[in-house]
Every structure is written in structure tokens, then in C-alpha cells.
Image (cartoon, rainbow, N blue to C red; front, side, top):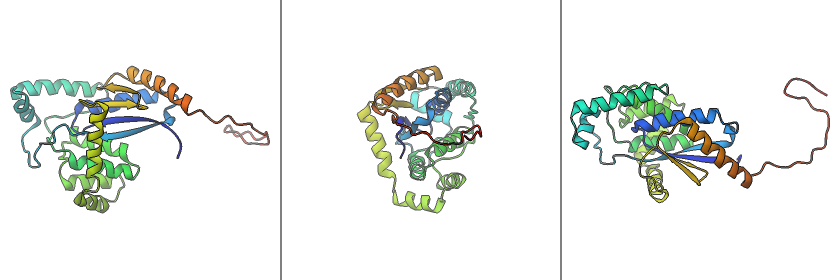
Length: 239
């Protein structure tokens, strides 16, 4: 397997700043000339593990109850979050959002990771929650998302029933405590530098450049002695 610098992201699918942070990191990576040498790995974090499976109140009611505010105050706060999302090209609709326990969703992410589709799973779950108003704790919804990713939903449902990836989710959460994660999103670059929150792309780019420069020193490109011969180059020229 090709050696790459690792960027780890502790995130929860119901965290609005995690989706925004994803977009900002992606923009930084698009400006980073060595982006092909970077491997992004998502780590599970559950913001509210006590969320019941049958929770049926709106996100405004949930926030108002949790923080002792009014529903109208919660709506005003979420309008600001919708504007922040819009600034990075995302379409949040908190009127449709269904608060959910994310343990099952994180197991889907780990299942997707085992099948090479982790980033796609994160993106699809974020969109399902914040834009489409889907219940990401619902097994049928998760199976549908699994199929949309080109993955075998029967295998996923079997893994979910057996809690095959439950311990992987718990391991990520335990690791978060060891690393010092106290909120998400939390980005770790090459296990040396950390960025907390959805910072601007320029911040991510600066950390990418610094961490990659140090990583490259420990993982140098091969210094080959080349014996020249006849070749064809990418521009179609053959000598």
C-alpha cells in the first residue's frame, strides 16, 4: 500500500460544524499540491449517546430543552448555522432535521470504511441529515444509503444486527479521550498537529503544508539511479 500522510477527523454526523469543516478541509486539499499523498480517515464521535431511539421532537425543541432556551431562540441560532453552511455551498434545512442517536450511522461509516467508501458514507449521511431531513437512526434509511453507495445492504444489515462494528465505534471514542478531543470536528495531522473546529481553508492549508513537510522528511521519495532508454512521454512523444 502506498505510504501517505494521515489526516484524522473526529466527527459526528449530526454536528453542523463537522459538515462545514469537511467542506473547508476539502477546499484546502484542492489547493494543496501534494493532496494525493494525503489520506483522510474519519473517526467516530457521538455527541449525545443518551439520545433515545424513538425521539420525536424537532431539533429546535431538543436544543431549547437541553440548554434552557426558547424554541424561538433555538430557531434564530439555527438560521445562523444555515447561513454558515450556505457560505460553503451547503444547504441546511433545520425545519426538516430529525434529531437522532448516531450509533447505527457510525457503524455504517465503519462498514463503508471496510469497503473503501468511508468518505462517501460521511458525505451521504451528512446530506441525508442536514439537507434531506432523513432519520439516520432508522435501519431502512441506513440500508437505503448503503445501497446508494454501491455497497451490499444485506451484508451491512447483518453486520448491524451482530454489532460487528460496534467496538470500532467505541474504540474511536476512547481514542478521542486519549488524544484530547473535547468537541468536534477535531482534525489531527500526522499525529502531531491538531485543529479544533471548522477553521478557514487557509488555516487547514497552512497546517497541511507544515505537517506534510515534516512527514516527507521521514518518508522521502526514492532517490533512483536511472538507466536511460527509449520511452513515450505523457504528451504522446516517443523517442
